[in-house]
Image (cartoon, rainbow, N blue to C red):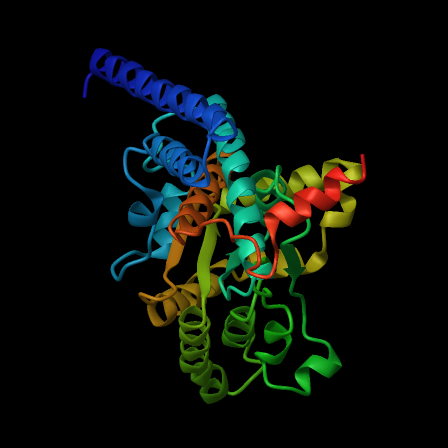
Length: 338
């Protein structure tokens, strides 16, 4: 493609993105004005569809891991790419803001259904090398969310108590309750990758965990828990830049640890270990998504899209009044207070 053709294509993409977000914003404005619950839900669904039209290819299709994808190659040559998104940082920030408002709406709907007995819930697994942006994902994607209904947990090195149980014990304790969204910053997959890289457990022990994890996740999905597994693919040079930034900023010293450099020294080992994880545990029930993460605005937009569409596709409606409540009588009693 020549330079002029590229400029023309970029302008066309920009107009398409702007138009989709303008229409989505208009539709979002209609939601609260809707006369009925059905109309409100229909407007919410339409606004979400319009937001999805921002993408030239849905992230759920474009970024899902499939055999033949090589993590090391993605990290080396594609970590700065923005597949499926033809806009810039400004467009992504606007998208995240609009999408976040709809995530908050669907989150309240999920929570309300959980209160009324639904078993629907959502688990988001965030993985990636150090400095891949896992923490920022949570702050940006859930910027308009309600803390009541969101559970965030970061997994570190297992404690003595945790190692005295099966490796999934500490994970099961942090799973979302009905109606809740749980976000795992690192997860049960660390208990496969770390012994793989460092040889801290016999190979037959950590390899057996692949089947245990697959069965664990299948059971979760079968019991109403949607699972989104995301690996943020940061490039080695981008990671170095972030590490130096932490060392140059006293307010970020707390983020830096010598173990970060030890892990960086074994970059290739980690790439190989994670590659095997994807090949063994990316299933139809709980697939992996490999998200280029050098551009934080892009990875945040991707996660926002995956989260919003997952919630939308739960096809929930607002719970009705409990059958033992007489609305007319409740109104009469409230009127008597005037």
